Every structure is written in C-alpha cells, then in structure tokens.
Length: 386
Image: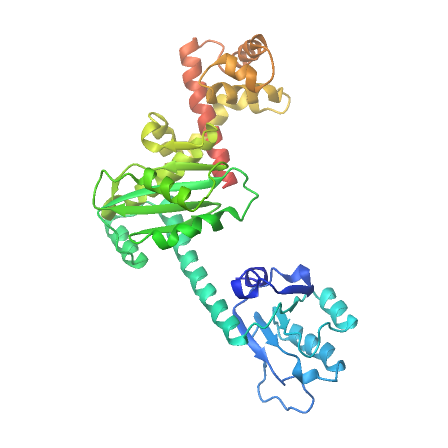
C-alpha cells in the first residue's frame, strides 16, 4: 500500500493533496496520530516518535497560534521516515507557504482532510485495506506459482488448503484483460462480483484478472452465469478480452484450469477476438505447451525460421504481413483489407516472404510452418508484455 492507495479509501476520497504530490508512491505500513509530540513544552520519551512509512494524522493543535512549529514538525517527520502528513483543517485551513515549499522540495505529501473524518475510523479502514492487500498478494503469488511451476497433487492439496475456500468438485476459470493495457482502473468494476463468489475466488495476475468458480456438476454453465452477473452490475465488456478453461477436477487439475484460461485469453488477443475457449484451440495446444515448458527451444525455432524476416535490413511490412496472414488464416482478401492495400500487393509480399524463409516448400507446408512460427512469436511477445 502506498500514499496514493491511501487516498483511494472510501473515508479518504475527499482528502486533498496540498504539497508533495511527487511522493505519493511512498509506502504506507501504519497510521499514527500526532498530538503534542512536536511541541517544545513536551519532552519526548521515545527515541523514534513515529515509525517509518507511516501516515501521520493531526489536527495541528500543538501549533495553535504558533505557526512556526509547523515547519519543524514537517522537517522532523521527514527525518523520521514518515510517508505523509494528513491534517484536519480545524486550527489551520491552509498551511504556511514555507511549509508547503519545504514539503514539495522533499517530495513529502501533505494531505488536507475533506470533512469531519474520525482518526480512529481512518486507521481501521487503512488496516483493513492493508490486510486485504496482503491476501491479494498471497493469491497472486499462488497464481504465479501455478503458472510457472509443475506442482504435484500434494502441493495442489496444500495450496487449496491455504486458499481456504469451500471449493466444490469441479473448477471453471476465466482470465480477463482490458484491451487498453494502460487503463489500470478497469478491475475495480469487476471486483463488485466478489461478494457473489461463495465457493469461488477472484484474483489478479500480472495485468489480468482471474475468476475461478467451482461447482458440483460438470454441466455448470459458468460463462452464462458470469455474463448474467456482468449484465446485472451493468459492467461493460466491450473492451475486455476473455479466455475460458475447460472443466477440471478441482483437487487435482486446478493449475491446469488456471493455465488454460490464461493462454486462451492470450490466444484471443493474438486472433483479435473478444473471447477464446481453450477447448477450441485444437493444435495450438501443442504450441502453448511447447512454449510453456521450453520457451528457449521454441524461440530457437522461431528465430531459425523467421530470422530472415526479422533482420533490420528487411522491409518490416513483410513480417507484419506474415503475422496478419496467419491471424486471418490465409485469407488474402482479409489481409489486404487489414493492410489497406490491393490483394495483389499481399500476394507479392507473400512471394517475397517465401523466397526468404522457405523457397522450396509447397503452399501447404509453407503455411503450416509459417503459422507455427508466427504463433510462437506472438505468444512469446504477449508473454513478455504481460
């Protein structure tokens, strides 16, 4: 949690940043109250008045009619490693200019309360948020392990016990990503669904979101129910990409379901489709597993086959055309539309591509090998972006 996250809590949403905006990235591990610690009349008994990485709350009563105390207080907080000062504007509506300038110079955020927020409630909400974030981080760590490691049945059992959810026999997974990767707020709308997930869970992984549902029946219509919930909460899916796993046994195939949903979403992005079901990927399963288990070997093949197209001296239109040709499944008319040119131009580029990578192959072998190499290339590129 950082100061910027702190300002997004329901109770702090009306706070104003009056100085030190460049320090909003500072971590927040605690919230403490400043009463009279910086008053010259009080002899501090603690060596460190405030713990580092704290947001310090104060009404600034200690500086009533003594504005000169404020600069020293801010200086001391910075020296003690505090992350921010949030003050209630009861004694001072605005702080002296020299205090604000000093805070700006040291990237120390000073926040002004928006109303009559209670200190105790701010502390409770902050700690509750931090606890939630800890669990979210734990879940993301679990997802990373399931994606990157081969886990045994015993390890799966242990992981499920740690997650501590009343999971049913079968698991269904969706992985969701916003097409605009720069938009970091889209997940918040989907987290509205979390209270509905009794025997299920929701968690982030890299820049995507997993929704996992379990059910006693293999016939459970997961996608249908998820769409009904999205409609009920008026959550637009127009700019989202969805990947769906097959149905799996929770106790033994949980990691497989997670990986399937993730790679299905990646393949949907590659094919510029809004939805992809893993069960419909056919031979692409082989490419996915090849890259997952030995990305170095897979990329050696890509570089050996597509290497001539990737050289700097080669026209980049050739590689772009090869990618579109594979994505459009060899439909030259659709490739021409995508590149805003005549089909004959695409045919000419394809002949050039063929001369560079496979001059002796027939049409079928050329497309088969080109498709495998391009899909591995795109899969690798997407994984690196993630």
